[in-house]
Length: 143
Image (spheres, rainbow, N blue to C red):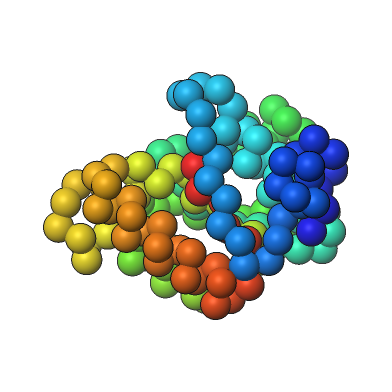
């Protein structure tokens, strides 16, 4: 699906592709979360729903950022958790076609016996989300 930013569409290869997983990375404080929230807003303007899953910020912090950006869209839902099994259960029930996970480094799975942010945690969560994305044809953005 094409987004409102021509530059971003070019980088992504003509917008967001259903069933794709995109990693959005960069230095702390550079604006990854703000960009992801803006993408969710653009996406939801096309009568699509987006789910923004935050493991770092609470719902009020994300809502405040959306207000500062003048983002007003009921098609963007916010969910706060860093428990991957809880997140995955929510994703399976959700009807959203765009999922944003912010940030993968603080999400943990009880299936893997290491701390959040470890290479084993990140690998397992990413592989599971990739399988989910392909199976459901939903776009996933990881931060």
